[in-house]
Length: 223
View 1 (cartoon, rainbow, N blue to C red):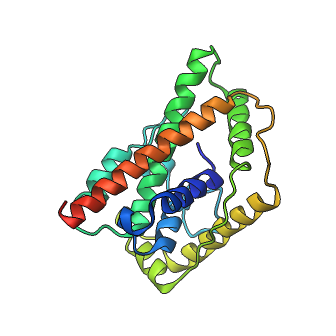
View 2 (cartoon, rainbow, N blue to C red):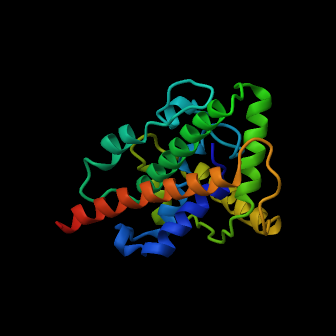
């Protein structure tokens, strides 16, 4: 699945290309943080953490070698019923949308080239995702503001306590700093995937997130 530098890059691009207002976003900080939220409790990106929640529950996904988060179910449960969904929720939806698009495309790609699923394939895939992520010039840090903490505690899928929010904010900012320190000017030779795979997947995920947010913003304006 996409690493946090990829999720951050998608969030930054949406804001840069369209502007927060056009996307129906007032609190950019909460939106950015929302793009990390589904991974907070999965158990390996944020430590220490108060609890662990299974990936199938955080991402609304069935158990599978390359799981496909049900971003549509998340939208119907936590976005569509609200006239003004919190920005953190919108960011979390973007995270799930990106995970689904990238993972579905990885499934299709390895099948098309005859690569068998397994640990070696998983390691190669993640190595390629890590390399691609380090070619993305991300810069936005998040802050544990009172507004962010309140949105995290009220997250409708499961509450995120203040201590875990602060720990996750630190982890996210460390990810951004590491990406800047180890930034790659060009994509190195890849193990499994291709540069075309990443350019097409990035464009598809960006388009899907953009369309969803713009449609929601238009609905809120009564357009």
